[in-house]
Image (cartoon, rainbow, N blue to C red):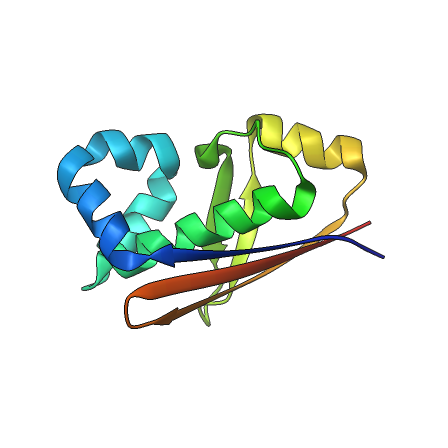
Length: 122
């Protein structure tokens, strides 16, 4: 049964500005080491950071919980690039308490925007 849906739209230029202004401090606060490595391995790294950011925000909306650190939500990609969510810390604990057993996510990019949707099921 679907128990939550979240969507988020992120401005890629806004993420690029945050990366330029705050650098590693921003990256470490928001992203895991694996996400940083993945995004930095691409030519348009700001697009990949924005996509991961959008999934994190969409996930938070889907579960209705604002008190979760963004770097406790890790976006991983399988071999064909499809995103999935790996949780740590409070995010993992909260999902277990809620009885969520499936999380679905999708990311898309176009021009200046990245968009993500997350669906959670019990």
